[in-house]
Image (cartoon, rainbow, N blue to C red; front, side, top):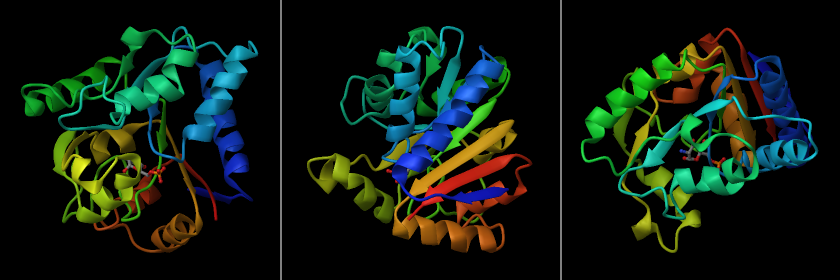
Length: 235
Ligand code: GLP
């Protein structure tokens, strides 16, 4: 694991975008595992800028997102599908049919989870997985638990996660209580993992978590076992 501490959010975003751009150039039909949240916004902005400058081509890229709130339609501005359209997909030449975000309004969410895993397999697995980290150490929406969950699953969000994500909603009551998240297995099978985080609290969490043992109580610690994981963070 490479832990890279940088000066600020801009430098974190620049470095992360450079690694993703390198992946796109090395393998034009790569499968990118994508994330939402405040951390990747600057990274996506740079990818959009480089696309507009003619430096990147997403026409053959496939993408799979980590997670989605249960019960939110992709047209809902709080949904992660909407976030991806707004921050990346609608600004670059990725083909919409090659972008996958779990369907949080599927009638049968368990079947949706199975389909999502099968689809990742069909795509040939993830070449580069981008991650953020929750205040409780979650990756995707894999919340602290007694064991790591392998596949895509429906998860009850922790109160601390609901509070942390309430900033994107008008009130905490509006934050969905459940989400569909890719499991730890798909994340760990990605050829490369890139985790980004910013802010004093997250920086402390990263330094604490990766200095300690692997435990499902801090899900991100599993990344210590990944053969090619880069963590770029700042205070
Ligand atoms: C949400 C997402 C995570 C993300 C986390 C951190 O909980 N499900 O995938 O990593 O937020 O978000 P931020 O980047 O805003 O700190």
